Amino acid sequence: MRVCGVELVGNEAIIAIMQLKDGLYDVPVVRANKFNLVDAINTVPLKKFQSDFKQLMTDYKVDTVVIKQRDLKGKFAGSALSFKIEGALQLLADINVHVISSSYIKEGLSKAQNQPAAVELGLKRFQEPAMLAAFGYLEQQSS
Picture 1 (cartoon, rainbow, N blue to C red):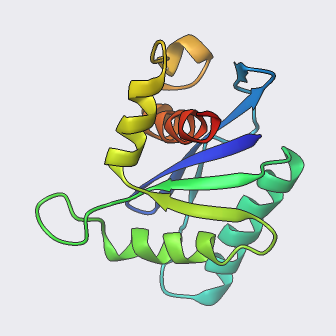
Picture 2 (cartoon, helix red, strand yellow):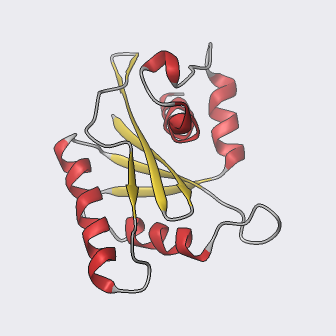
Picture 3 (cartoon, rainbow, N blue to C red):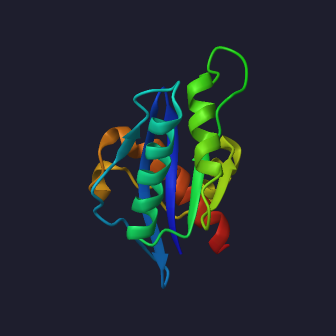
């Protein structure tokens, strides 16, 4: 199973792809580690964002996309733009998309023998929340 973890920050979707195969985790090198929505008002940039994201998922044969849930209200609430991006990702055809909570991720991480660090896996430090979302989801699915 190949999963893409997504963290939405501002106008960016930060991603990390991880695979669980025969009990081993693999993090493939991919051509993009984040996607930007440059124009939040017009339809054409949103459709391009959605198309580019879907093409990457198709190229790397991703089965499932997991989006790290953001708060709806309060100090750490997600921006309106991040919810627009989330909606565009949830509407992708032929790809399973789930929004998962921090508690779901933590529960998956608690089942793991050890918790990987993004840098150790060849990812950038800013990709760690996305990678942990994918890892937590895979741990939950494998148990």
